[in-house]
Length: 314
Image (cartoon, rainbow, N blue to C red):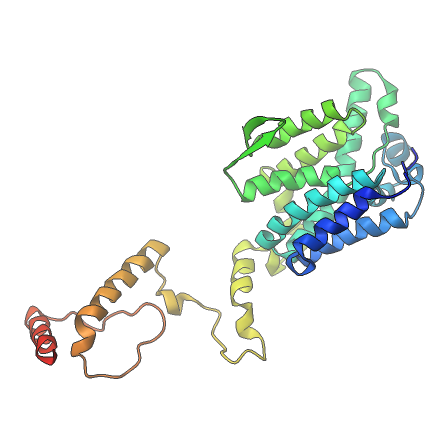
């Protein structure tokens, strides 16, 4: 397997144009770092492709396990790099903003290795089932397996919607399966097993035990607890030493422990109460921010008196 090189790397130029069009400041750090690593390795490959591609023969039989780390970040040519990195750009921005940079980076690292292992298992199974040892020699490189896994995660965390693949509208939930077949039919040189391995790893995370295993491996690290991560994300500014308003991290004091629907109902009720009675109130005391709970229920006589006072003031 040799890298296919032409005179000018048009795919690389288009990729850089796409990145600057999005804006470096709009790309989360792990997504940007992963993209930069792939571009750097493309320009300065660590080894020839034959020395980094992953296969049953090279990875399992010859125990060259470093290929599990090297294969995902090497690409056959500039267009291979372009299509993979543009896909990473779109999926990475959405997922990293949803999951947080630390968890997303952890997922990228685990998936990159695990997909190579699942790929070897699939190729080994095909070789045994079809009695064709050539499957054990199939050597693959590229980040597309990880991208198929991220596609499964993206559809899991952003459900709904439809995708259009080769003119066929299909629910985004099942789009990865049609895309798997379509890519293989349009580009027979692509690794069907590598892409399938990505889908299977993504399903292992969203529907299987992989997510729990990764959390157990990470220990008690708070960023792998969804509720803790979201609370940290939204209230982290309040703990910054230079921030002048040191608001507490417990938002129950603002919401009263109410659900979203109850908060809306309470806000509407308070708004109507303010319109009806604020003109008759002689108190200039500022109410606390958030949802105000009236200290007591006024009698009908008191309500009537305050309304009369309001009309008298006009």
